[in-house]
Length: 313
Image (cartoon, rainbow, N blue to C red; front, side):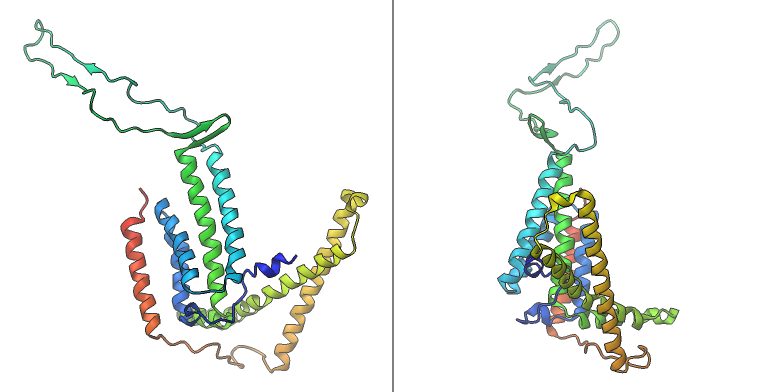
């Protein structure tokens, strides 16, 4: 269960403060939404470029290697397995490809019939030295393993989308504090207050849920470690006994999480927090600085490149 500590998914990195930490959370949110939406109706070249861009941004930001090495390593391994499995899987078309032209060069010559027409029929010839463009729908086939153009295209799409969705979100949470995320969303959702939508309550629940993620990971880790220390003989328990043990563990996990939630509620009440309207909290001071305007200009350039080279072929 040390994997939960080595892969702190959804946790905020307080130190060191990189240039990604110092960007305005609203700008980072727009960047996140751009990564999550630009791969829609995009070609595979653009999807691969998104993966490369995320890796380069991580390296340029100088995030400690201990933080991203295992996260990125495990995620790249998972995406590689998805790529291989999807590539060798049936593509769903169920067609048998046949070449349009014979293998050998040919000369098609048709002469007109002088009894019926006086106009000669044009002759269509193919030069033996003329190079024909080679096309093969099946890229690799050996035994039961068969890779086609469509299966490879689907494999690249699935693997790159999986990496982009998971790692871009994790990078955003890694470099943005929960209070900054709350302030950014509350600022962006201010127009919804005209429709009597409780924006402050929604952002408060979001902040508490982000704070609750480490507690859930800690409770899961502690319970599984308690089972490992007891050295349970699972073979003697059988299937019924194993299911009974894991049901007890799940029940205990739910009780501990409810206890933690009650403790958080009591802490808020002790501090005089009765409602967001009466107890106003200034989450974060949002101000656009020079580096934020540079990030906005880069985002506009990012979308321009997407529209130029990233459209689906």
